[in-house]
Length: 294
Length: 294
Image (tube, rainbow over all chains, first blue to last red):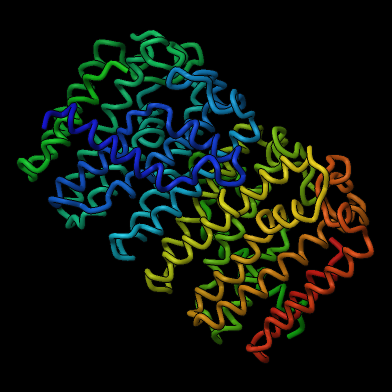
């Protein structure tokens, strides 16, 4: 199976899991489920769920039902996009080439749809059918901490908002990316590992991998915002500079940022050495994250 | 110990648990923890945590650490108040006699503070120190479902927003209150019961109790909005009528609403018959909910 075929197959599995784990549009109250699904099924690349599944596969051959745990990551990711796009935050009208949730459903419903997706992520983890309660509890803790206010995604969002008024430094940049994007990508890999029953050594190695690809992902994201058009990205390009965001190109320049992304890609490969052939998809995903164009 | 003394003691226990389970204001990023704590420590009555603790005590004599589970309910309740007060939703400037979170910290930080409290509730439950993983998983599921988009608090909030454009009927009213306030109050009682290891019969009886006091609570809340001043309530009075909310007084009139609250109080007492003296606090709390003036 080529990587493209693998991605298509995993994305399909994740779409199905999302569809199972979120009430249908016909479920009362209809408007909230329409708003949740509008943002959830908007052509996302499902990079976090796919990382979760691939990490589980690096630990055990056939991690049954891991796509259900994986879809909790996408629920969190999607909620964060909906809330980030609100007028009070990034005030974005375009996301994945379509009007943002609040442009279609109004601000009140966008706030509540985000809240619902966040809440549902934990309901899904607590109801996972194929693993024991000890693993479910670890997954809930992992996701809540990664999404939260203490070094997690929300902390990163706050640092990011504060950063708009500050001089861009390597220290501030490191703090923002580790929390804002890094924590959830790291958790994606760790949750797959935990789901599949990784031992401490495997979990430590996969955590290092997750940290390196998390950093690589953010560097490339910052680069794309500078180097690509809105049309190519499916979201408004050039917003980082306009909003005086602290980004890798702003701190290190374009050339050094490209080098850093490549260094992180190689470090991610190194972290996977204990895994041999089982980690082929994780290796390919590290390459893909650095080489992507959107 | 009188009820007043009991309430003071339990509220103190809950305040301490909240303080332990939420990062201090000095924790980076400081502003989000200030915003979370501003709304969390605003003189709330802690009715949901106290119901949770009292339900646990009805099942077993000394439910060690139940105040930690109880405080997850207050985290969810507080997040819902912060988001409900936002300009896009109820647009309220006053809460518990103080400016609302977004008036003090701005809309962006209020949205993120709500998200953080919601996320932290599940982190707290997954890290409970005194119970086994099976109970933790049940608590996470219970809280997520009660707070969620399918018959839970968010569903109620959506029905409530939609109701502003609709003719008030008993059917709509029932649907709103069951979800908006009822689900979390019911979950408060059930979570205490689950924490303490209730058997199926005990859980069923306490669930009935929770449903009756949930209904009573909402009826009285609607009555207070009509009959009390903003000063007495610590929040803007008379907003329901102004916003054409579907309320018990709007559907049934004041007199019948008072009768209904009393009927629910008595039904709550009946549900507690299997518990004898152990449920004294739950009985007193049912009375308090109906007789309160704020």
